[in-house]
Amino acid sequence: MILVITLTIDQTSQLVTDLLDMPYMRLDLNANPLPQISYRWDGSIFSASLDGIDLSEVTSVWYRISELTYYNQPFGSYAMLNRKCREAVIFHLYDWLNAYWLSHPYAIERSQDKMFQLRNAVSLGLSVPKTLVTSDPREVVPFRESCGDIIVKPTAKHMVKIGDKSYSFFTNRVSAGMPLDLESLPNSPAIFQQEIHRAFDVRTIVVGEEAFSIAIHQVGAKKGGVDYRIGADRDLEFEPYKLPEEIQKASISLVKRLGLEFGLNRHFVLVIIPT
Image (cartoon, rainbow, N blue to C red):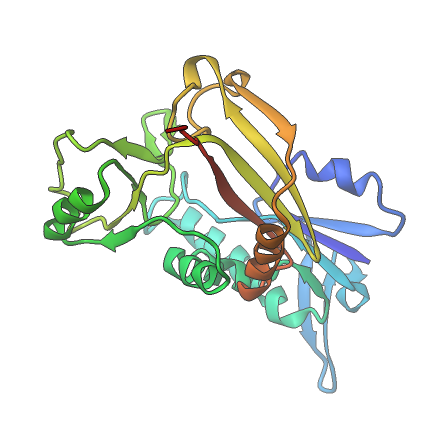
């Protein structure tokens, strides 16, 4: 039995589960009402069930959630208490299930640490741009002077809701001559990196011992952009890409170092300017 832990907005998982040749269950963390999940101690053994099915039958778990966000549950409200209670019940599963996880939630949470990622990438021989993670404005100016053009991004992913709209913070370019507004940095640390001027991006998906890469070209209004996620997908072109063997092996090793069975690696193909 396979257990898929996801959210109600997840539609793409159905493309995979339609091809499964074994039974599976789906647990949507944000479903309302929550699926019937129970834990028992009868005096001799512990047991757990989901919608009446014994969870000891679960042999594999496909965990598809990168993070949980809070939009409609104000602090101090019963809605927030309800959400915390339901999540506590679901979180019991993470240590309960004796199953293969793709990937385990605790490993996913740990792998979100950017410096943990970078240290492991460097140890495997992958090239990493100069990086500064800081809350100290005094560090930023000399760092940019040593790099030239830099990029900046938040240390954490989070959606900000203003009125009826939600906004994400992506990577932004800070060119060598641009003014720096660092007033908020002491309260909101950020990641600064040397900008890599590139021909295109490569996104590598690692599953177990296999890696699949795709080249992402920014065209039209996105051409020359610093983050291909900003704007419309119509300004992106995709094609399969073959990584050099040593980089592919290092990418697979990096995902394993992070304790994951599934992961994404981002690479750059540099612009080579003939002299």
